[in-house]
Length: 186
Image (cartoon, rainbow, N blue to C red; front, side, top):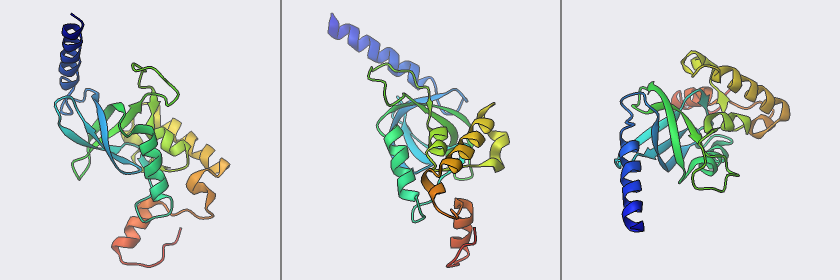
């Protein structure tokens, strides 16, 4: 009886998760299977389909850039091998889903914790990503204001990358590396 009930619950959960595909603007539910950097991760849905997610509203340091690895590790500590819910707003030029990733709070010890922690915002709070104000109008209502305030607080506290005298934003770093320049002006 227990086995049958457990099997039924699993099938119902799998069906409900697969019904939330990344093609309907419904939240995408799944498990994080990979962390590329501080603002990109991979989610596996219940149908075993992988989705690359670009965290909406933030821009984290790139690999090879100061704080790039710390930012990646921070996102991994928040989301790797965790159940997530992704509210999304379309795709970027690389086909990645642009989304706000929600996870359970790290201090929740139950298996059914609600996914209330905004991983995107947490990266900004930790000083491991910039709020990307260029795309503020694409964020969910209220997010731009919260992300802006979080960046201001991280700067004031000199958290993470803000501990550097003149941290280089990733968009400038990418431009300089594409242009083959050795030095970047902040």
